[in-house]
Each structure stands twice: as C-alpha cells, then as structure tokens.
Image 1 (cartoon, rainbow, N blue to C red):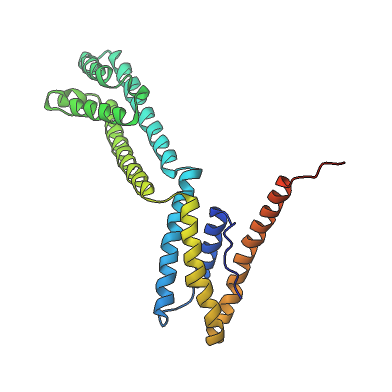
Image 2 (cartoon, one colour):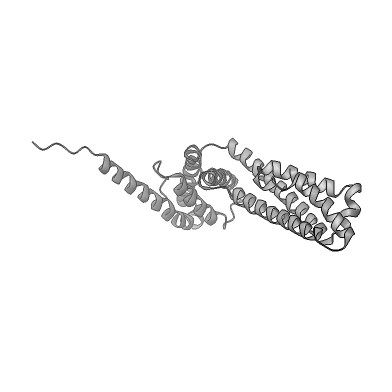
Amino acid sequence: MIQEISSYCSPSEINDSVSDSLSILKRNDFTAHTYFNNSIQEVDSENNNLSLTIGTVRSSKFAAILEENDNTRDRILMGLTQVTKACILREDKLTSASAIEVYRAIKAHGLGLKRQGYQSESAGIDSLAAELGSDKMKSTIDTLPESKAFLQELIAANGKFKNDFDANMAHKAEIEKLDAPSVQKKLVRHLFNTKVVRFVNMMSDVDPATFAPIAKQLAPYTEKINLTAKSRRSRKEQETAIVPEAN
C-alpha cells in the first residue's frame, strides 16, 4: 500500500519523490491502461513545472551562461584593442595607418563597452562590427590580419551571447506564467495522490501480478518524505509549545 503524500512535505521533497516514482513508472508499459498512461504524462508535466519554479528560487542556469559568454566577448574585445594598438607602432606605414583608423573606430564604439549593460554592450559591438565591416573600412581591416581575426571572433561571441540572452528572456517569460513552488506543489501532490497512488493501490487488488510489485517499489518514496515532514512538524510544535509557569 502506497501512502499519499502529506500536505506538510516541502516543494523539493515532493518534486524529488515524484521524480523518483515517475522514473520507475516510465520503465513499464501502461499502453493498455490509457487513463493511467495519460495520468503519468500529466503528473510528469506538472512536476517538471515544479522543478522550474524551484529552480528559479535556487538559481538560474542562464545567469551563469550569460556571465561566462559576456566575459568571453570582453576578453576578445580586449585582445582586438591590444593587437590593434600594437600594430600602430609597426614600422610599415600602411599597417600603422590602418591600425590608427581601426583603433579610432574601437575607441568610438568599444572602449567603454565592458562597463555597459548586457544589451548596450551587444548593440555597441554590433555597431563596431558594422563600421569595420563597411565598404569604407574593408580594405583597412584587411591589412591587419590579427585584428581581423579578433573581430571575427568578437562577432561570433556576440552572436552567441545574444542568442543566449534571448533564451534567458524566453525562460523568464515561461517562469512568470507558472505558480510559486508552494502553489505548484499542491497541484503536483493532488495529481500524484489521486491519479497515481490511489490508482496503483486499487489495481494492486484487481491486477496484483502487474501492480503489486510497482506499489512495493513506489511505497518507500512517499513513506520517506512523509516521515521527514512529520518529524519536522513535531519539532516545530515542540519549539512553539507554551511551557506552564512554575507556581
């Protein structure tokens, strides 16, 4: 017999327990039980949403990706600047003159970009790339192969950053549609209790050969988090108990 998940279990406890239970259920073929098969998919979908809402409270994976990509393009921009400045000192007059022109463009668009916000820096790099890639500057940048190589890297890194930034904004938009973890856990708990626990318990009597082993596998997961929640609640009640004054 599988215990139903207690209302005192935390969002993370429910999320982990349901995930473990679903992994067991997915190893079995329930195509002959259409209702139960659909129920598993429904619980899985809502539990994934619970994972997302919990994830936003803990951290966003996109934040780390964006920071890493931003640091990458900052390093490339610095490399472009330093290589171009070095070319100004070359004895070859054409190289030096070209480097001066490129450096003027970098100075106009890029020297302060690292201190800008994400979107402002992206726009600044696009502007710099557009100027250096224009017909007017094409022959100039072509005489500086090191600077040109850094520019191509910068364009690629900025493109990757913008794609990840858009993905981050889309992720945030999806998250905003979801309920808070404390609300979403109630839905997952309700669906799991009514559509999985009760069904498996009932079918263990109807079709014990199929469902009794599954019930035996699922039972420890809900039992474990219920015991944890009960213990936590007991400690909380003890801490808040009023101690009678001594006469």
